[in-house]
Image 1 (spheres, rainbow, N blue to C red):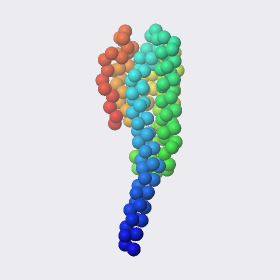
Image 2 (cartoon, one colour):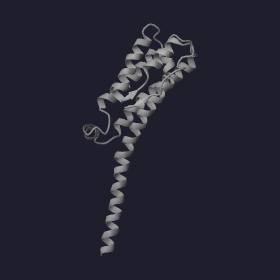
Image 3 (tube, helix red, strand yellow):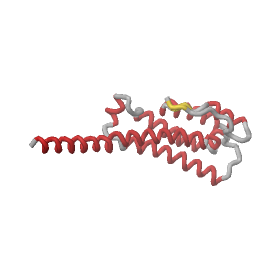
Image 4 (cartoon, one colour):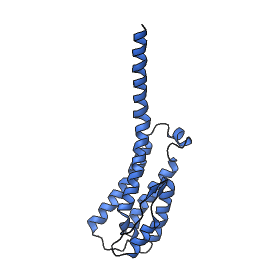
Length: 163
């Protein structure tokens, strides 16, 4: 009888562990990967929204817009799949939902800045600062200034860090 209880308790612990991993840990990990992808995408396409008057080809600009917009939806979707998000938010395990929504909104705004020759860079710099604050990233302000002042775009930039 003791063997049966041991086996049942072992199976129960295993099943409970798998439930916790699949429903809580993996979705939180996916959200953190999405935040990392945000950092990657924003740096990779920085030349498109920080130098809107630059002569990029239309297909390249459209690709940058699509990838950046996909990033916005990825952040929102990974947030929505986390059950009991409010509880994790209270314990600061995840970013506040309002921060994710604000970052998503600003990322969409960056795609609009790609075509705004007059206000693109100042608007982009503000949006990047807002995204940094919302997602806990540190994207270099220097990279945007360098992109605006050099012919090659983002040639010299410091590596981003996550706070």
